[in-house]
Picture (cartoon, rainbow, N blue to C red):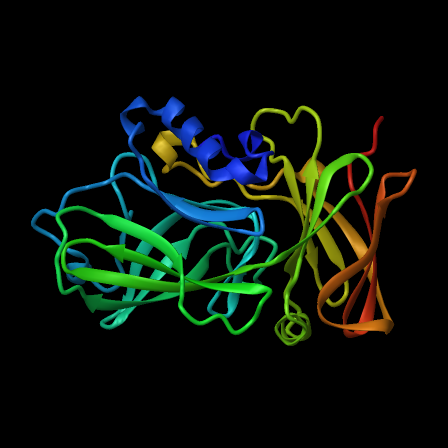
Amino acid sequence: MDRSWNAMRSLGVALSAAVVLACAAAPAQAQRPTASFEWQKHEAGVTYGVPRVGKHTLDELKVGDSWRMGAFNASNLVTTAPLIVGDSVVAPGAFRVQVARTGAEKFELLIEGAGTAVEAGGDDVHAPATMTQAKTPNEKLEISLAPVKEQADPELRALALLIQYGAPQLTVPMTIVGTQPMKVKGFAALDVFKLPEPWLSKRLDLKKHTPVATLVRSGKVGNGESDRLNLMLGEDDVVLIPAMLAPTENNGFGAIPKPDGLWTFQGKVIWSASKKPSPLFHVESAEVEKDGTLHVVASLGERSADIRVASAPVKK
């Protein structure tokens, strides 16, 4: 996972490939477990080192402090589809994660760097968590990611990330978004995300960008580059930006790498009345034009979005 997306082109083995690369970078982590969930050929999951329960437990974490949520290398969250967490959204990418205590009864999963180009006012996403006491304490950190029993929306899967360390356990609700796969010339795939219209329109009204699709690059990708470009839709513009990569320096505790500016493009969106109203974000057509412009026409409720943005750097 520390080498991130270069080894994740095959969506069905995205997380397993990432784990193999993380282990290659740190032999001591050969047994790092992964808590993951796969749906519609996309996957989300957390890899972490396993500390045994000692003198301190989660409920002793001081207000204002955070815990690395593991041992050895930093714990990472990788997802190939958007995750809705609280009022925020995590775009496809790889991120370092921690547990933070923000109040006497308030905990959160801190997803570092996930707010870049998504949320105004910060680079991190704060996923609310609740703490309870397990009936049976465990002897080491255990993390699981599984769907909840009731699923109200067929295009969304509500999940619960469960973190147990001793008797204290944290539950972090999150939702993985369904995918509309498409093909566009020059790329391995275009994955369009089936975001519900009321939720997405509310974000647009608040002037927040949201990941609505991912372009998967084909061919060889340079070292340290992401092989995925997230299409971030706003009310007044669009941005195509490389998926975030988790830090690799200092066992994953180094600086969070910023998206490559060479592969970051700003584009335009023109709204009009939709001929085919849709309760979800739905792409009617997508193509890469001769000049390299990605042209997408999509429906969202009663509106249609005509999106144009560069898809590759201009060759000199």
